Amino acid sequence: MIHKKALEISKNPKFQQLVKTRSRYSWFLTFVMMFMYFGFICLVAFNKDFLARPIGSGVTTLSIPIGIGMILFTIILTGLYVRRANTEFDDLTQEILKETK
Image (cartoon, rainbow, N blue to C red; front, side, top):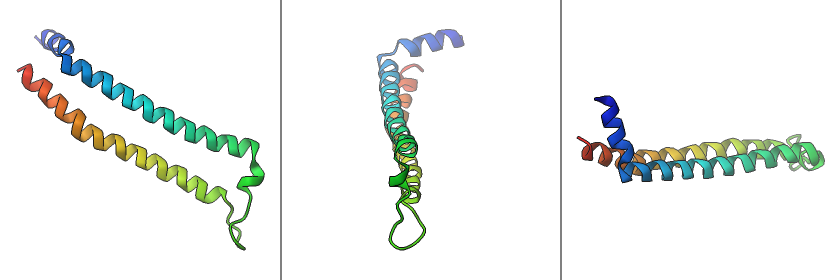
């Protein structure tokens, strides 16, 4: 019984659209995050002098706000995914479940 239901859902065009859209969006966000992360790592590896520049007359260097920016950027990307998952992806999932009852 469960196998038949799973097969029916997997053949649903809306389900295939959901999987394709969600996968594409996830890979896009992954690429963006990896680009930012590896860019930061490349700065650490190849341009330490840039990151070591002090901000103003204090002891804080550019690396601190850039690092905090990376953390905030990660939180924003997570929020974007969660918002889309809770609206578009969940709505599509509910439509698929209603069609297969």
